[in-house]
Image 1 (spheres, one colour):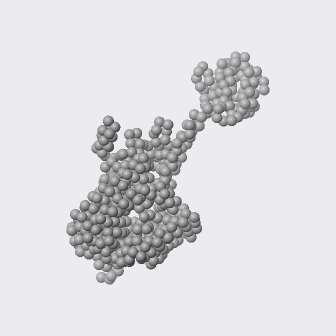
Image 2 (cartoon, rainbow over the protein chains, first blue to last red):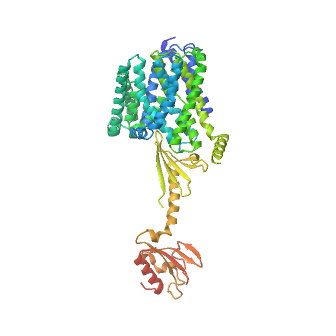
Image 3 (tube, rainbow over the protein chains, first blue to last red):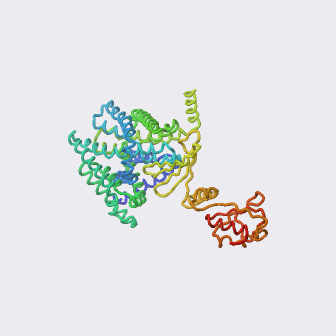
Amino acid sequence: MHETTLLLIEVGALLLGLSLLGRVAVRFGISPIPFYLLAGLVFGHGGFVPLSASEDFFEIGSEIGVILLLAMLGLEYSADELMGNLKRSRLAGLLDAVFNALPGAIFAIILGWGPVAAVALAGITWVSSSGVIAKVLRDLGRLSNRETPVILSILVIEDLAMAFYLPVLSALVIGAGIAEGAIALSIAVAAVLVILFLALRHGRLISSLFSAKDSESLLLGVLGLTMLIAGLAAQVQVSSAVGAFLVGIALSGQVAHNAVQLLTPLRDLFAAIFFVFFGLSTDPVDIPPVLLPAAILAIVGIATKTLTGYLAARTAGIGIPGRWRTGFGITPRGEFSIVIASLAVTAGVEPQLAPLATTYVLITVIAGPLLAKVPDAQWFKAAVRRRLDTQSA
Amino acid sequence: MAVRVEKVDLPGIGFRHDVVTSNGRRISVVSHRDGAREIALFDEIDPDASTDSIPLSDQEAAALADLLGNSVSLSQVNALSEETVGLYTEHLLLSADSTYANRPLGDTKARTRTSVSIVAVVRDGSVIPSPKPDFVLEAGDSIVAVGTRQGLDKLAKIIADGTS
């Protein structure tokens, strides 16, 4: 069979399968991300049905997937929101970083993985999944709750922190020394600050490059600019994902609004490909040996995240039930952990990182949304009330 | 008393406005960036949590705003005399010797002659709102009129002696 024909058959069958899996996920009210990862595991290296012809396609598709994930994240926040959040929730963000990045780093050192893998695992355990959490908030009807801004600020700060973390990690994984790492970090900081400044002062100017009305040219233009900046950023070792994120932030107003609507279907397609590809490149045989460490790490990660949310909500003057909702609500990890893991694994850092990250994300992304529902349960409410009564008595 | 309205940013989603009532209950309106909105009510025991939120379409939101706005303006009619500068509400008593006793309201030509609106007539303790021109006045009726000071004075004179 011709190579292209085989590619069409493989990609078509896989996308069809993903769509069915997505329906199952929605039926059970969970995120489709774990299903995509599992589908990748089944078909990939050492899986049951290896895909041969479409591997290159999935590799390029997953690269675009990361770029689109980050660009959309940037589009969803305005520069004003980022700055405002940075001022208001610095402390919560710092707490979040310390409580959730440290366990990963310590864990990697215990496993004897070396400093670069420790930095990568710290990132994997740290960052929550904005996509999954925003969806859980909507599904549980909590958008108007008073603790919701606390949750969203933590997510915003994490996403902004990634703009500094990813360049450092990209420099470290290619074996750069401390000096080169510092240079990458300063380029990243400068780039982020310049973009934020431009977006705050001249946001209209960048957006006026595009016409909000002509959807075809807008789609091509925004996608083109995003990929171009992402490529240039990768060229100077600032990670393509960060470049895409900054383009998203720089666009504002009607252009950003229309671009979100145009890019969402593309993002959904390529993000699915990204998760499948990560699963594809992980050998399922590697998973059983890391199952126990991953489970321990997931339990620790869920506990520290819950503590972070609880304390952040308490600082914001939220009542006890709301603190638990915040804590459990932010436990799911997802796209960012996989982005970090794939960055590290492609550069050849610690082969066990990929199966560990996959398992970690699988556990937290399934358990997190289930945990988030716990504070709504009658027994939980009753337990909180009993504790309050004993305290006041 | 001024009403407490709080605005909170919801990064990536939009913003939320809260109205806290005098007895401590909270009503929120979440405005999504794509133009959707929902109204939410809150639990009394756990005031951070919404018990229910109802998405509203443009028309539904406008209808709700109209309803609330109308009931507010009705309740403010009573307080009109104190709040609106230059506009007064007055109760004018129709005496038995008035030329308009037992004649239709339209004969007074109150609106054309004095620019005063007759919003109601109070008879034997019951209110007849918005009386039509063919409504027949009786001695002892109390006419509720809204207008300027001058207009009301003029109407009082017309009702009293039939002149202008």
